[in-house]
Amino acid sequence: MSNHHISTNQWEKKQEAIDEAKANATGWATDWQHIKGGFNPDVFVNVDDVTRQKLLDYQIGPPVQMGDKLNAGSGTLVGHWSDGGSYGFHNNPKMNEAIYGDTYHHGTNRGSVQNAVWEMGLPNIETPEHLTQFLDRTDALTAKHGNFLEDGWDPKDIMLYREAPQQAVAAADPVVDTPVETTVDVPEVVEQEPVPKEPIEGVDYMTPEMQDTYDRIQDYNSGFSAEDWIAKTSESDRDKQEHAQRLADTYKFEIAKNLQPDPQSVVNALTIAIPGKLGVYTG
Image 1 (tube, rainbow, N blue to C red):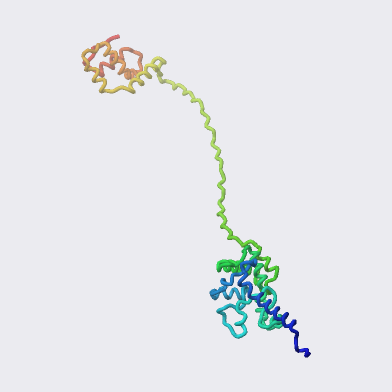
Image 2: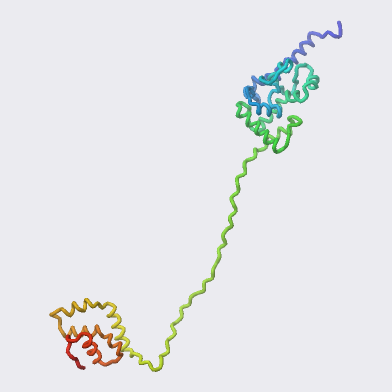
């Protein structure tokens, strides 16, 4: 038998390897819900150009999607995204790696990307919103660590997804100087005893009895009313002696003018104040 012929057993094993590789490359699309960090294939359908470019730059998802510019070779690889294994048209992984280059690594990194999703805290990528969240996190890590995926999805890159997303730093409250309490010393006011005035030589001061009489006159005058005096003088039934005495008390301020303890001065004051009402009284 020629060396170029292979046995049936060998052919079957080769076919099994091909089928297994194909299942590895496409089976994720149906089993994604049962895979940690699995991707719903629908999230890659009809994405906008910006999102599609990010998926290619970060090597997320199948390298070839429906809607991409296809040729005879790439058309057979639509949706292929393997977890290790092989990627490409040929059955020989080394040949495929030599042919496809970076696309080969992209096409075989599904397990690593799924692990990153899981490390981030998402059970899987079920909706377009989940995909956007995962891409935003990758953008943030790129801004912080540079192009960390330049050499592919290494284990150290996957661990970066464990980092807590940076929170927006709240604006600090403006610093306000605390007012310093100032104490003003207020001198204590000490009440001093009034200094007694020294008598002036040549001044005839009132005696204590005269001062008392003068004070009572001042107290009385504080409530004096001319209208009340006129009303009282018109009363016909008042005793003249009592009335004269009240008038004398009312006009004792004349005493203050004379400052003389002479009773006749009272009579003189009354005679001047109300002539014709009283006679001339003598002491």
